[in-house]
Image 1: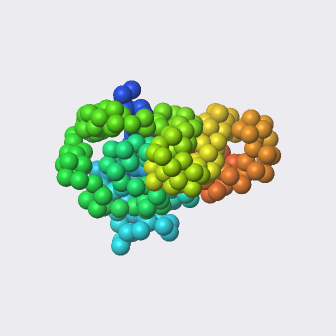
Image 2: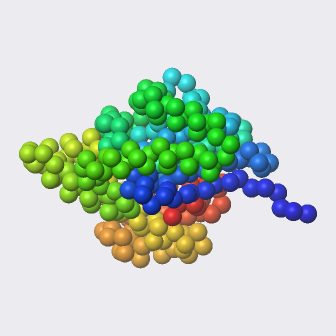
Image 3: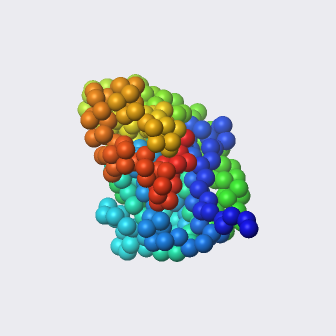
Length: 285
């Protein structure tokens, strides 16, 4: 007897020309498998410096934790999520198909002019922030026949706009560690006023969070990626991971991992292996 279909969770890299704009595409599809028990219909996301556009192609997504500034817990089919300073939990009352585009916040700021500091930990309907061209794209994404077509639509829409934005300025981008480093360099070199307060103001407008927080998230993500395989196998040596990641000690690592994910490193490793609601930690690379 063939194995029963399992939930689909995919992380897809953008085309090379957009690698400095789009961090990744995420697909979560439970419509083709047996209904999950309620506890496994949760989606647990860490604090993150990226912002996202979330399309619910089928099914429903509801807020399952405080902090979602919407009049109702039911999320609209097209939703913008700003950078997050704390972990987030959503819930699917039934099968769901979600398509998510994760942007570097400074890139989305360059594309739209939207200030990211006002959107920290915020969720907004797309039509509250984006112009008509973006809303036409949104309708096309929701109507597309499959995720490959959705990716093509988004990439074809973004490519000329991102090329133009890059001509108008050197925008920090690339892998998250390079993006954070270049963000600080660009903020210090932009404009005539380069005092510490002005630099920090630029960084918050572009990224939504202060440089200190971005560096903390950068270090945590890199440590997670470096230790990912041993975490999933259950044999991570946290003291070694803390030392290699530049933490003062193992306790320092544990505090920062808990602040970003809501769990200790040991709890996170177990949940990543055994709990379907932590699917994003399994596919992140």
